[in-house]
Amino acid sequence: MFFELDESQRDFAASIDAALGAADVPAAVRAWGGVEKAADAAPGRKIWSTLADLGVTALNVPEEFDGIGAHPVDLVVALERIGAHCVPGPVTESIAVAPILLASDAPRSAELAAGELIATVAIAPEAPRAVDAEFAGLILVGSGDRVREGAAAGSHDSLDPSRKLFDVNVSGDGWAADVQRAREFGALATAAQLIGAGQAMLDLSVQYAKQRSQFGRVIGSYQAIKHKLADVHIALELARPLVYGAALSLGADSPDTARDVSAAKVAAGEAGLLAARSALQTHGAIGFTQEHDLGLLLLRVQALRSAWGDTTAHRRRVLEAI
Image (tube, rainbow, N blue to C red; front, top):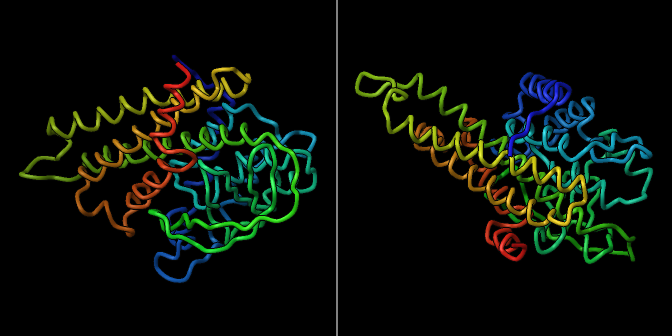
């Protein structure tokens, strides 16, 4: 499949890149995860305010609730760039999933759209624990066809220090919502971020390969490095259309949505893993440190690969659909 974004979508992606590029996102990630000192969400919340100003937090909120009601393709455009910049916080949960689970809750949907509320979500078995519940103003728990509010219980460290996981205690009878559709958006949004993070690691690796010298030559001149990075480029270029194709299926309520979303999540996860391995091999030991920005992306990719359904679960769904 071949997809070409229109001019407005390209401009939207460029505006997100410009805004996040001007912000010190790596420092916000380190502060959010408490890498250097006690966790501090303030820098990360400033970035979320920037995303709200750009309309990102309103993308999946219906227009009647002061949102944009955008097509899933537009959501993927935004989340790919967010993944590339490694934005901290429950991105998938608050931007893509929570608007669906809130159903007809107009006040809180409007707060989500305006960026005044950050939500996190737990839906078993794909996302049994809530990400960043300590910083979220709302915790939603989906089960069957109903949603209930939750409260954070015990916390668990993640591979990515900026993505703490929390057990959740639920209360109340809740309300009806399309939990299955929320699951699909969770997997799709995660796949989009994996593509963005993978592309960012490839770009960093190409740049580094042009600068680092070994045995009197820049390492980018060696065939082994060229082929390795070319393989990453090919993997990303093959995975990206699957992600956009899944967005089209989800937007059209296609009967093949489950298959397409799972295929996208698998391909994006594999491409992200290949990008991470190649980036680490290209950079050497310097890449796997919290002081180097690449280290943040490496950990984020590892965490996102298992988020909202791991590779085994999504491969199984693809097999069941064919």
